[in-house]
Amino acid sequence: MTNKLLIIEDNPAIAKIQKHIGIKLGFEVDIANSLAAAIDLIEQNEYFCSVVDFVLPDAPYGEAIPFTIGADISTIVMTGKLDNETREYVLRYPIVDYITKESRQAFTYLETQLARLPKNINVRILIVEDSFATRKHLNSLLSRHKYKVSQASDGAQALKQLNSHSDIQVIITDNEMPIMDGITLTSKIRETFNNDEKVIIGISSSKDNQVSARFLKNGANDYLRKPFFPEEFYCRLSQNIEMLDNIATIKQQANSDYLTKLPNRRYFFEQAEINSKINEENKQICILAMIDIDHFKAVNDNLGHDIGDEVLKGFAKIFMRYFNDQLIARLGGEEFSVYFTNTSFDKAKEQLETFRKVIEKCKINNVFFTVSIGLIYQDNYNIDQALKAADEHLYTAKKFGRNILISDKY
Ligand SMILES: Nc1nc2c(ncn2[C@@H]2O[C@H](COP(=O)(O)OP(=O)(O)OP(=O)(O)O)[C@@H](O)[C@H]2O)c(=O)[nH]1
Image (cartoon, rainbow, N blue to C red; front, side):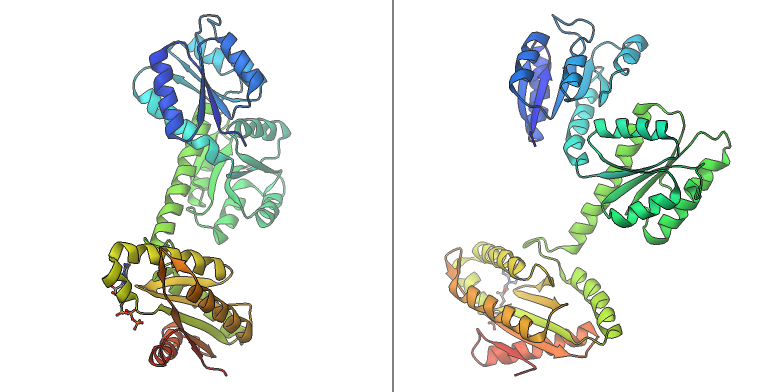
């Protein structure tokens, strides 16, 4: 996919600011100072999106807009014209947004919009609406902002779509529909997903003020009355998606180790307890390993703490690669853990032995080192006790001279 941004702007100072914003966001930027120059560039390049000035020397009344739209380039229009007539004229085109150059804030807003577009490619939105015309309209609004779209014509179909598309993050639902209405759908979705996991936006043309309250009380994040202005629709949608993104970032930070980016102790315990319950129900034996880098203090003492950090980061990358299908964590310091599921003791042991030998041979930041491993195979469903048992084997491994695996079996 191209990451090129086309700026069509005849004012060099403004073009420079826009270019700076584009580069900061990772776009490759081309500038055209007239419609003619833009047409040349569009013929030779593929663009992801464009920022188009409404007034250009050879296109004084928005004539550049149909060129970018016609070339299938997502278009943001910027203009100094503040009148309603211009606004209505511009909004007749399927543009991403319309920004008036009233103040510096306009450029902050442009940056937000440009940052959002590439992210939208990964956001799937489900439209639940029985009217074909409204579904088509919403699909067109969402597609021009580069969202992925799924559609359903009633609540029951929507639930099926949610089952088959786990990547749906936002549900935009009408209320008045056959089989299952939007409010019932909302409360059914909330039985499984919190409002910081999936956003629900209710829409309705009902004049009954109760509808918005009922949507919100049943778990919707937001509500819009039909017909709505596209600008309001986009603002509410992107605010809700930002909220999802922010919560996902906070969760990710809370669950991972700052240095190695591996899952941390907190996450490990949370997930291991879930795995343990499943194991207990299925009468599966717990297979858990503790891995500890040998003589790591010497790495710090001889080469410095910074090199020690780099060694830990390098180790974590290999660790992640070898056990990417298992629950792993940095429990703290130079101590790591693997909770095995869907595998046999023999396979887990073989995987750990291979890993131990790989570490023994590889040099991370010019440092050779080894690991000791304690592995348990027990019907122990208490995580604290299981870790303690694995730690006892690890202690034995250290006592036996390090760079070995000690386990319950064999
Ligand atoms: N660079 C760095 N060092 C760390 C970090 N966390 C813990 N350590 C160091 O890891 C070392 C662990 O030392 P010890 O517990 O004595 O163990 P060891 O030297 O590996 O010896 P054995 O485990 O007995 O083989 C200490 O020097 C800690 O300061 C970290 O995040 N970065």
